[in-house]
Every structure is written in C-alpha cells, then in structure tokens.
Image 1: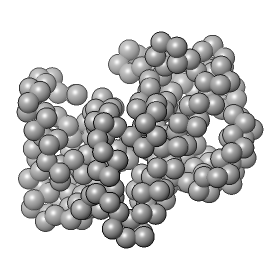
Image 2: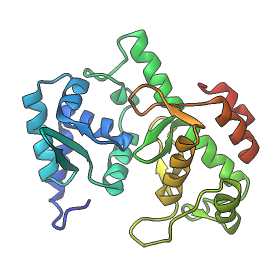
Image 3: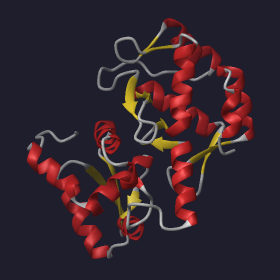
Image 4: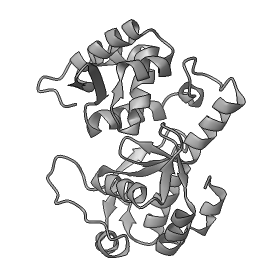
Amino acid sequence: MTRSTPVPLATLAGLLADGTRARFCLALLDGRAWTAGELARHAGVALSTASEHLSRLVAGGILAEERQGRHRYVRLAGPQVAQLIEDLAAHAAPTAHADGPAGGRPPTLRAAGAARAMAAARTCYDHLAGRLGVTITDALTRHGLLSQDTGFALTADGLAWFEGGLRAALPPATGRRPLARGCLDWTERRHHLAGTAGAVLCATLLERGWVARIGSGRALRVTPPGHQALAGLLGLDDLIHMPG
C-alpha cells in the first residue's frame, strides 16, 4: 500500500468485498489508467455508482487518481496493491475471474474466447502472466537464469542474460521493489516472474512487438517475431500452440 497511514485490515477487506469494486481492481491489473466511465461500462453499472465506489477505493489507498480537464483517471496505487489483488485472485474460484459484468461462467462464445485468451497470456499489472508468463519463468529457471530455491532470484547468468541476450537494462536496486519476485498465477496456479525484472521483461516484449495486446484489455498474443525471438532466446519452440 502507498498510504502513509495504512487502513485497518477490516476496512481493507471491506473495500475489496464488493463485487463491483473487485471487478474494477481486476480490470486495473492491466497497469493502465481508466476513466470512471470506462470502468462503469466494464462492470455494467451506472456512472454515479462507479464514481461512488472509486472514491472509496481512492480514500482507502487502493487506487490513485489523476484529473486531466474534465476527466478523472484512476489506476492501482502501486505494485504492492497489484500484488495484493493478484494474490487474492489466485485464491478465489476460477469462475470469479470471467470477463463481463455478471462474472461467473462466460455466457457467450465471445466471453469464453476472451477467457481463454486471458488464460493463455496477459499482463498482471506490469509483468507477464498466464500460460505465457509461467512458461517463460520455467524456461528462465531451466536455463539457470532464475533460481527458485529460496524465493525468486536472478542468478549471475540471469543478470548477464538481461543485459546481453535480451539487451534490456535493469534499473539499479533501490530496495523499494525486489528485483525478482514470484507471483502466484490465478489461472495456472503456479508462479510467474514479477518484480523489477518481470516488469522490464514485459515492457521489452511489448516495445519490440514480440507480444501485442488483444483489443484494449489485459490479454496478449505472441506475434510471429515474438515466436522467433523467444525460441532463439529461451528455446521456447512450443509457443506455437499459443495465440499468435
């Protein structure tokens, strides 16, 4: 949490206990800022209802807001909040994460397709999740670039791989966020790479067009150049089975 005075646990739990507020937080795991109107349409509620819920989430330190002219944008207050939301989602029933205002089982073929795309590859705030995120994490571990022996840690070879193989600079450690952290994936029920290294990896793949967003949501697809690059960097030839 980013508040200087954390809210009591019961208050925090109450903020996330409401279905509409939970859907807002899950949508905001894409790491971007949304307007109140966008979140209202996503959750299927009136704008006035959305605004009331958002004000409570901002006051509770879960969301941060920014105003530009008449528009009010909100985003998750930081990576610690994103970690909390994703960890809670990992312990919920899988049907609770279906897209759309009703939740539960996807009611249409389109919703079912969106759910499959989310399970295959998506962003979790600022790092990769879903089957893609877990597959890359497993490959990093298999190649000795990531250690999972006592938590997540990049090895010396892993640090060199980011700088040389991936050609992506890791920022200096500040102590505010771990370089590597395991994040429990709510669809795979296994850990994917988070932390600063996970964020740099995700940003690099997006910037180079190796993965691309599907529509305006969190779901991703691996592009043909991405298939080629990840096969060369990590030997991931089996990514051919993922959406591309």
